[in-house]
Image (cartoon, rainbow, N blue to C red; front, side, top):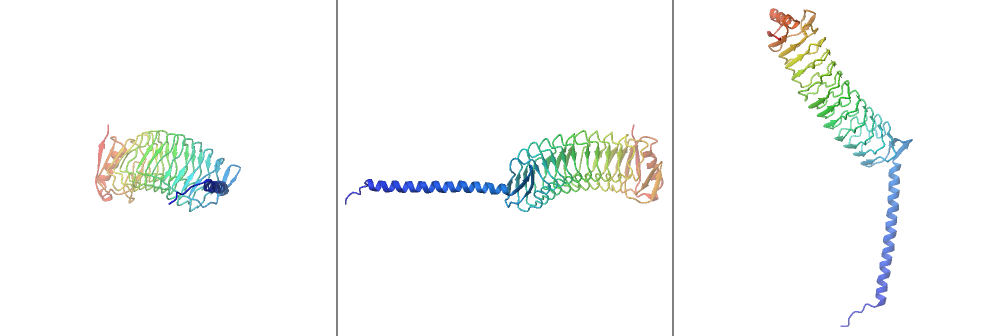
Length: 357
């Protein structure tokens, strides 16, 4: 058998094939690059941007990377978008507008940049799957209902946030949060119905607004800052707190502040001047220490019933447990105990007075 000889002709043909293959590859690659450029351009066309404000997004992608150059995410820019799952907000954006991501029910992750200053009202309202979001340093204001119904479990409000809006974490799944000293007021309904278990309120806060922790049933304990002066209406109504010491500078505890909570023990400080109806429906309350001998306080604890008036205190109540009331000798606390034990027909149980020195 003769050997197969690969001459010059065979080599030339192979060379031609290789050249053709290289040309085809180059043309295909060039086409792919051009197509990629067209795709990037098309992606940018999914955004309507006017004067640095992202007005709307009309794309269908799950992952959204907001273009550079945007300074503000406008009102309702992603309103009720049912497709997006993850959003990256670039540096340079200083504001997330009202209702910007409201109703984005599949959104689970948002990356917010340094330099962001404001998160608008209802910005992430009912983003029920939103678990991953970090509020960066520099944010000064978070609007009403911004994270209501969100699935975030742990979040830190950075130092420098001066204002959080009403219902900001309403019915959210947040379990742990730190309130920085820059926030002076915890507003109305801020954590109402949330799954809160642990909260750190740093020194500086002076007021807890009404319904702030309303029905936070998982919140079994809390340490309040010494700077606190006012506890609002129904602030802890139905919360899971069993024991609490009111800070010495609190002057007012408003109606139903601890109503219908499983509170067993409470200390009311000397500076507190008014605590009308603050403890009504506290069926488990067994001990109250009252350091202001002249405290004006209606419905000390228990359930509204027959009207009783002692030393300016009007009480609509029955005792649900044998009660210990601590106070100074000759104080309203002592007189109240004597009245309870004298008028047994009004009460289910006796009360015991313990003098404090």
